[in-house]
Length: 98
Image (cartoon, rainbow, N blue to C red; front, top):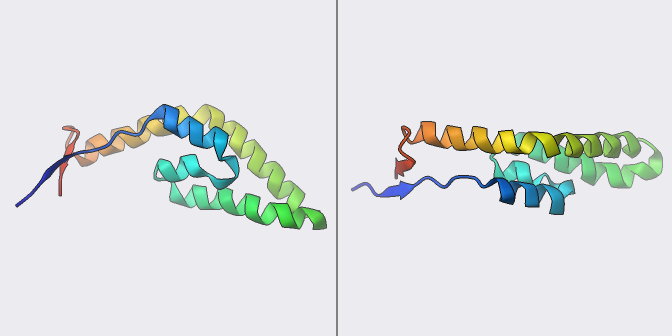
């Protein structure tokens, strides 16, 4: 027997709250299913902070900060893309069978 569930839509406000409140963790990208880039953002911060004492971490932190700034403009589009993918997975109904 199959159960019908509503496919949850990703919320732009939630994505931006995660981006603004948890920038070092790539939380907004985890939320939007972009795990690879989220892990990369997380590693840039986690490795950049201790390595900044040896200078090499400074460019890592700089890159992470620029990426964060760019994501201010990209996040709304990423939410739309994820919601569109969810509709595609559910056959455009907003529901999936599980």
